[in-house]
Amino acid sequence: MAILMLSKEYFFTEIIYQHHTCTIYSITLANKVVHLTFSHEQHLHAVTLLRSTYGNCISNKQTDQYSPLIGQLEEYLTGRRQKFALPLALLFLRRGTPFQQQVWQQLDHIPYGKTRTYGCLATAIGAPKAARAVGQALNSNPIALIIPCHRVVAAQGLGGFSGGVAIKEWLLRLEKKKAGGEEKQGWANNAGLTTDR
Image (tube, rainbow, N blue to C red; front, side, top):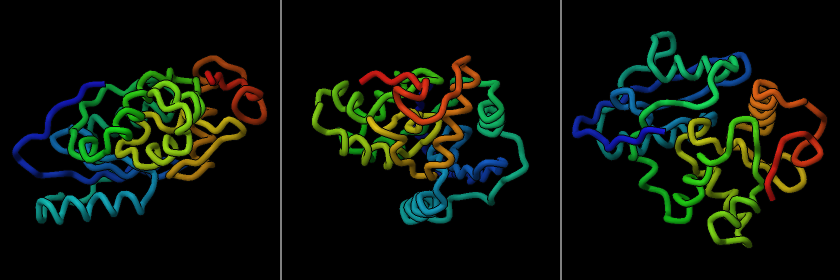
């Protein structure tokens, strides 16, 4: 995952990508991903924050124009891409607390087609009793999918997801199928989604 610093020219592009399973809302800056979410509410909050900080800085919505982000989203959602290769602007990532940033950094270590539990992530960052706080940090992930918070599940069940549990389930099934795993009913250990506790 390439990470680039924010440029001095603040002109953002809002991209809304429609897929048959979901809508993905994103904001880019010179092809660097600034924000990506499945939640319309989180997207509006990010747009409002950018406008209050930088003024009228967001270009018109693009839904049908090609960009590296759209190309890689299409590849991922059709199972032809397992890892994103897009530069990230640190604007919203830097706004996270040190704890949130630790959690977000751990997400890149979860392989495509695999899952980890909230408790596993809490242990990995040295806070084994902070599983609930890990969940809250995941809900604040400013670049969903690319920083794969959907790969974190509850010890018993799927857990939450800012874009909705149905989308999380669909993403996990897609990854599991394309990674060559068997699809079974249920989640976590009894589902064939490999979890490390």
